[in-house]
Image 1 (tube, rainbow, N blue to C red):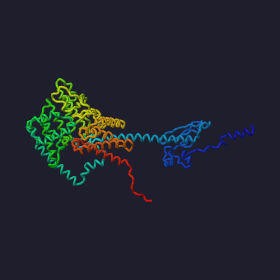
Image 2: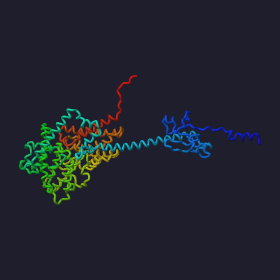
Image 3: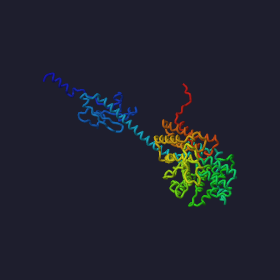
Length: 585
């Protein structure tokens, strides 16, 4: 063998080849040329905050991991989850086809593992946040309803009840609730009032109201009765169509009051009771109750007792009129408020059992044209009343589940129809204001308002943002379609047509207005504040015109004030607090 060949053979022997040094440090410590404690993860990676990406090459660490033959450049990465990934780069590195060295591939793999680990953390955080949102949503549903009392003496109020809004802000609730009686003087005053009320109720039970032989004997003097009847016709009767004015005046003036029929006298008594608190000029009190409210309570009690004695088989129009007027009188005088929803439901069921939800034209041969129109008016009034009371209580309207085929009242004046009419008069256009315009227009939006009342008072329903916007658009369309004569007027019927639609905007956005700061929350707060401000402005116009009947019937002002207050508190909480202290250099 030649000397050159021997030299070449000696170079190829293993002894002549430079021995590769084993790596025991993790890849990050090796790259930074720092000492590694060879633990997994090592202390330096833990200290630097990226323990999940601490990895070792398998040529010197963890000897229990065997490399496949011929794969000296294989890489094994150990992550915080205990996973192991093998990347074979031997062939590519040996052939020179890989653009990266083995160490570079290892570093890239470590970065990918780190990103995957962080992404998994974010995904788990999103899931946890979603679960937390669900829990907070359920808690919000529980807080929206106002459930109080002990044992079986409990009361429940739903989301659209103004009192339920207090639970969303402990600041308002503590101010208006029991904490105000922590002051000794106020606590003593509360105890004295409670004792006074208890003594008065005991005396009332000991001396119940006796029904006189002639109900008309309970009426006030004729001048007072005339004034209050006229006041009622100018206010509440423009919206709640209960009586037929020409027929009423004909019997009212035909005979003196002591000769009236008891059923007609009961109608007049409830008309007087309904406007007693509206017509009062000065307040006088007997113990804890005003004399006006005490008088109204006496009239209502006497008429209710009279109603209980009437036959339920032979009902007349006056029986339904008295029942409606009794509910109105109790509402305007704040009597038996906790029974308002159940009493309204009872009247609705009585009307349904009498077939008021069916169109009276089906009884064409046995019912007059006049009675047909009066039934339509009474049914529309009962449904509107049930809807208003349900909203106030925060419970679904009972009429929502009833299939109704009764037509709307005609847009006519009372003088256009009478008891001897043989045919229905020609209906006037909606652009012309009539005695029944309120009911005619209200029927057109009844389906929308009823469905909204049911949704908003369902504790399991949570309207998504898109549906909230859709419902608001429908409400705006209904408001825009109101006749021109309703705009800018200080009349009760025109104001009611606007309020009964606009009020839903307050509740549609109430949930979203309490959310975290963002575009949706800002829009929701703006929408609710604008709606509340417009409603307050309408009440202001009524007050300037000395029309205060609506304040006795509805609690819109209270709802608007609570809504604006809650928005102000939510806005204040969402803004960062900036310190005003000056920092010294």
